[in-house]
Every structure is written in structure tokens, then in C-alpha cells.
Length: 234
Image (tube, rainbow, N blue to C red; front, top):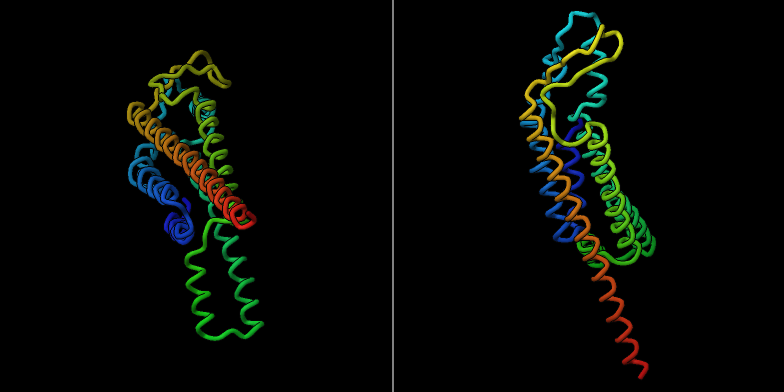
């Protein structure tokens, strides 16, 4: 399993440059998705292959049927989803680190005073989402949305919905005929699948809202600058 603590530490560092909606997204990600995945979902899916039983004694039939109906474990798919969804946010951290490194290098080259260096340090803590940083942040939101939607589609397509069946019928070789196979804890798995899909949908809505907020704010800022220069020219 990924080190969720290390991932949280990295994302929390990026959080200082996020909007209010970005901070809400991070809270939803770790409280309603990572914590639920660690505390509850793993115990529900821990016995998924062991308790997948079929009414046949044919060697290899149960394994083949399980692989046919559950090609990828829900837990592993959700872990991959969380890692991929969190990765674009780290691009913002890389951009900020690169920008700060360049600014610090230029300050050292001109031998600034201690006071100027202190003011620069304060500036690094309060970087505004403008210019290239705005584009990096906006692109990270778009990529995050694409990953969320892609994994939601993969989950829905693989299992033909979010409901876990109680009984599946398998005709795969080497099963001798139509074999009935029974899934363990189908109701619990359905509840957790719907919950994780709902949490993912909420995160997608937050991403869309944050992207719209960034666009509106950028347009408003641009309009203010244009009006300011127009008043100066006239």
C-alpha cells in the first residue's frame, strides 16, 4: 500500500498556494477517501478471493472464474486512482520550488541585505496564483479531473455498474459446465463502492468549481488592469 502519510505531507505543503475550494478538496480526499479506504474498505475486501466459492470441485475453476469477474481488485484500483489524482497537485509544488530557487539564486547574486532576504522569504509564503503559476495550477485541475473521470469509467466498465452481485454464473474453461459462484459480503461491498464513487464525484465537482473560480478571478483581474490603463491613457 502507498505511504499515505508521506503523500499527505507533500499535499499539505502545496495547500498553502491553493484556493479555499482546493483546501476543501484535500480534506475530502483524505477524510472521506483515504481514511475510509484504510480503516474500512480493506477489511471488507480482505477475503475477496478466499471466500469466493463456486459449486464445483474442478481444479482451477474458482481461480479462473474469479479472475474473469474481478480482473482488478477494487482496493488496488482505488489506490491507483488516489495516487494518480494526487500527482498533478505535486506539479504545483515543483513549479513553486523551481520559481523560488531561481528567485533566491538571483537575490544571492546581487548580494541583497538580510532585510530584503527576509521580505523575500515572506513573499515565498504568500505567492499569488498569477502568471505561469496560474496556468500550472489550472492544468493540474484539468488533469486531476481527467484522472477522476477515467478511473470512474474504468470501474463502471469493468464491473458493469457499482452494485456487487451476490451470485455470478461462470462458463470459463476449465469449468465443466455452467458454475454458480458466490461473492462474499456483497451488500457491504456495494455500499463501499457507491460511497467511494460518490466521494469521487464530490471531488470532481469541487475541481470544476475551483477551475471556474480561477477563470472568473483571472478575467476579473484582467478587466481591472484594462480599466486602470484606460483611465491612465484618458
